Image (cartoon, rainbow, N blue to C red; front, side, top):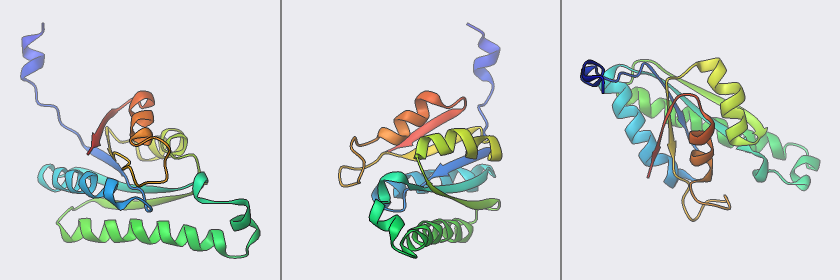
Length: 153
């Protein structure tokens, strides 16, 4: 055991918070954790939400403006979270939305390389979310990410 290594603090500089626009229950505690940490430790925070493939049906695609409205809901949710984070005193916060796709693939393949976080904070999908398995997105990100992941319940 390297005793000197154990005495060093673990410090994060850039945190990525994933929020689910259609499951605010899972996002609330993750948001509280991420903003508290970002405020207290002056961590740069990026809040991201992805319009999920499962949220768009073939009928939505064929109805003019339907997908745009769903994207607007996701965009507004991120803007709201960002505004509240700023009101809570988080100095460096940005919001990011991504169009329809698979959540964990987008976060792992597009968002992480762009933002370069050293910590990802996810909520645990709740029973009432549209996901088949509660907690599945956070679990998949934790398994595949090359950085630390905290799943908040």
